[in-house]
Length: 101
Image 1 (cartoon, one colour):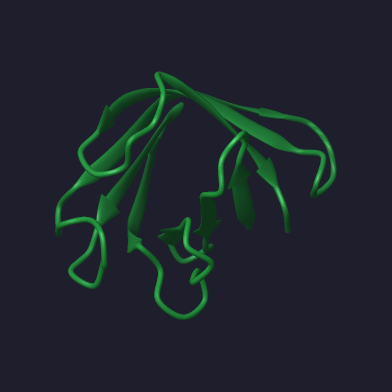
Image 2 (cartoon, one colour):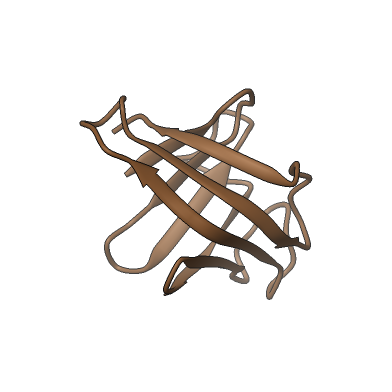
């Protein structure tokens, strides 16, 4: 699905094949700021940058702990988490995203 960072302009697209892309410049489909793989371990979500990112270096990570979801349909569902580590994106200590699709 595609998720919008609440209070920001970052869009995060997560695919069922375990990949992601994010962008805050309006280029999610054509030239995202970063892309890579998603790892899930319990309530921890790790986004690890691949070699094709325009902004982040290969191997940069965003680690979200205590990931939770609010129930609901798309555009009502929210993801919330604590930012444990972010070696590329400048994010606050806690984040929430609203599902767009």
